[in-house]
Image 1 (cartoon, one colour):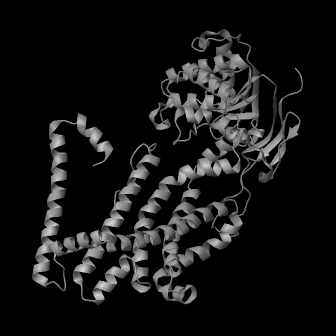
Image 2 (cartoon, one colour):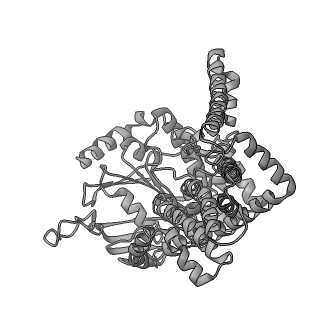
Image 3 (tube, one colour):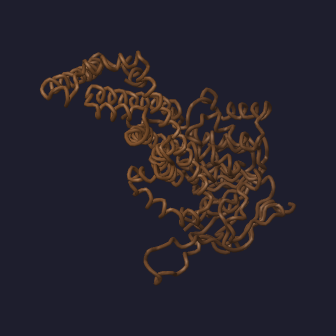
Length: 272
Length: 270
């Protein structure tokens, strides 16, 4: 429930409040139902195919206490964060550099748009060939996946900025730097946050896939290594932790978005 | 009267033909929006410009403010010539000497009322105690006190217009261009804002070029009015308005000069 909902809640008439509670109740019931379905399918399919949720939970607790799971989570998080920062940095900077050069933009645009279509995961063997088996190939994968999402959103955002606002700022004495910082950046924030909602979970996914393929640590390695040892409980534990990680990042993003874009008259963003 | 502050001679404007996909055949030049337009504005004058919609009034103000470029002719501010045909050489706002209140208020939606009013000072690097005090004084004068921390979408149409107006007044440009600033408001709010504007103008005696499509507004506010023709716009008439100031905007209709002038201008607009 959002802050706004809560505010409405207070002065809402009793039937409306009751209906809101029904929604919360429904959500809890649905979660219980899903857990139950998981438990039943584990019992039906056997422990090699679907791990028992109770055993998965016990494993997560035990590995967290021993520090192993914390270490793997940290490795994946670090990889995702650095790759994300690189991809996001270039994804924001490049459209801003192209903004004042319409002819260069026109020349470069078809190539950038065509390169969007290259399946990035297919490039991983090449990255390994070029950059070795350290973090570098994984960072390239994460960075590229994030870059395209952010680049396209910021590029479109810059084009959608109200010309009138820019003219107003120029007449009022704003230089190009002030216009970029104040008018353009703030105008494209909704685009930027929409891109982050796609790019952040994708960064974690890409890091995990990178870890499937290269290296010997991280959540991706944990999942793949457990599978090779027929440790289905370990596979499920890794997936649960990875999912929790993405959900936590998303929750953080929603909070930041709400603070930064508090001026917006309506909440236009989706909550995923 | 001494040398004019703004002088426009033989101004012509047409927009570049939109890149049509119709092939090479249809490449006739775009029609002229403004053609052979000449007038001048003296320092401290309140000039109103009236014309039918689509007469190029906004384009004319954009050219004077140097956010758009003239296709031909001569546009002079003091002794400086505006570039003709070269959009890259434009100096929007001529180093903060020409303020421009546009038809849409163009308030920055992510800034509060106070932050919007302070915006020009901030980007000009002139934000200090005394300019801040002036901003607060203007906010009070415009009746916006209590709304300093509201976002534009939380203000009424009239309040947004006031905020846009004082955002220009706050940095004190000697010339202010106004493009139908009160166009979309109800009659009551409009009269109120006209009175506010005249009061603010009396304080500083700025040069104002005020574009409108409302004959009564043009007469009530101006020292002199220009009547523009339909596109391509030319001067269809020019009238000095000698109704003495301070004027009563609400009672202006009863002035004997008003009715005669109104009829003449209406004739010229047709």
